[in-house]
Amino acid sequence: MNWQKIRLWLALLALVGLSISGLWGVGQEWHYSNRLLAMSSTFMQTLYSVFGLAALPALLLRSRSARPLLYLWAFTLVLTGATAPVIWGSGGWWAGFFAACMMAVVAGLVIWLAPLPVPGELFRRWRWGVVAMFGAATLVVLYVTANNVITVTEKLAPVALGGERMERFCEGLRQDLTHDELRALVDTQGYSSKDASDAKGTYLRIDDPTAPGSYHCEARFKPDGSLASVNFTAKAQH
Image 1 (spheres, rainbow, N blue to C red):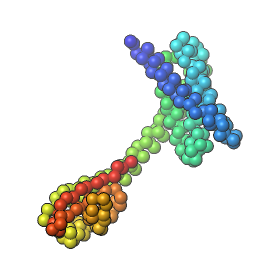
Image 2 (cartoon, rainbow, N blue to C red):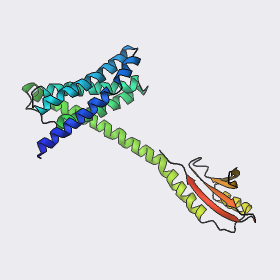
Image 3 (cartoon, helix red, strand yellow):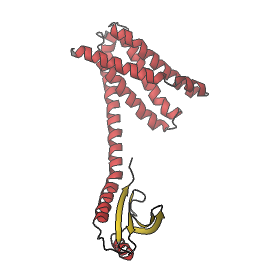
Image 4 (cartoon, rainbow, N blue to C red):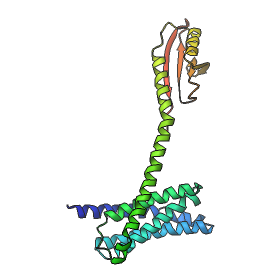
């Protein structure tokens, strides 16, 4: 299978997936579209699904209509991305702008993959403008994605390091420690402790005040007052 056929089938699969996902639930959206903006967003979603499905046979037959159909599909896809977060998700116009850029990148990749006929003179005259818009949308998506990754990393990294430090502390506790001795040791480490109980009995809960609720240790004691076991628990971070 040559590269042209691979590009064709990748473009077809992307169009099928996006078009079917666009039609999925659109009937319910029409039912709840009681405002003009909501109706226009749902109409654009319906259009990009229809244009995407209509472009499938045109691509397979290498018809000249494939290019205008894909352009209409891309245009309505971008408009859907721009309006859906604002109208249905209450995400604000910045969320709509980012979604539009995401859809522009997706549409640009599909059009690049599709083995289209040679464009006419009109498109060749404006192709660099289209390329520039695609490049700008890609930069916006990359910037926002990188910024979100950095923000999440900055948020989770201290929690992960703090959890690792507490886990080492709990694993290294001596078995001959008493309840009061352990509480004093916990205070020197900057942690907090409190007595608690569950179905298994009473225990000493050790928390990190810098990351409340993220992780903790449960220390249980023998009848003679010495340490019996210590379990470290970390909450999954998202």
